[in-house]
Amino acid sequence: MLIPLPCADPRAEAYAVPAFSQMTPADFTQGEETAIAGFLAQHPDYDGVLALPGTHSRWAHISAGEVVSFRSFLTGELFGILAAPSELGQMAPLDDAFADAVSDAMSRPERVMSALFSLRAQTVLHHPEALSAAARLSGMLIGLELAAARPYWLGQQVTLIAPQPYAAPYTTALQLQGITAPVLDRAQMVLAGLRRAYSSLP
Image 1: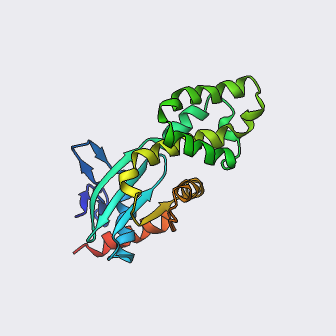
Image 2 (image 1 turned 135 degrees about the vertical axis):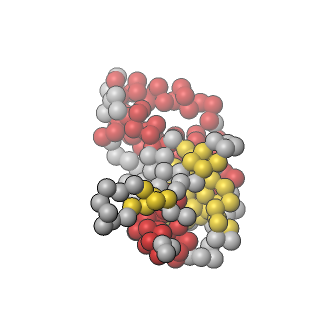
Image 3 (image 1 turned 45 degrees about the vertical axis):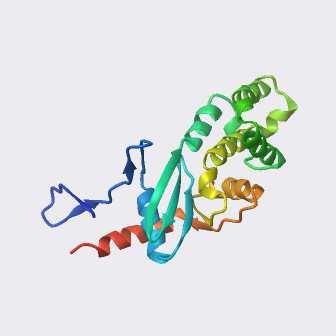
């Protein structure tokens, strides 16, 4: 149900699409609900999981045309915070180091906090491996996310709804787990969701 908003112009009407929210564990969406609605408008019989990476990544279990559950992750935001103080954000996003970092983070998550500082030290000390620092940073963070989201993607049909540049690293990380996930453009799904919301107006 759309939420009517105050509008100073009497000739116009404004509405907001309400977010999904839950109390336990506390969570909410920030626009993903519109992309999900757009996807369901085009795939009403879908049964599986939608992965929506971005500044905040969200994984949603879809069944019978409804969101059964969802979880959010700060992966993209953490990448921006950790990359900002150094040159990490300017490095190439994907290489073999990325794949190794995904696997290491998923199999040995207790080592990630120390490994993150090592990445910064390599950059400061001009260590040869600093050239792949961003790839490894991205790989570690996405690996941690996949480990935590394992109940969502393990044994499930997964579809990515992703803006660039998020599609490629998540596609690669999922392929490392044996999952081939089709990628849909998030902007297109949001537009489809807005059209669906507009069609519901009386």
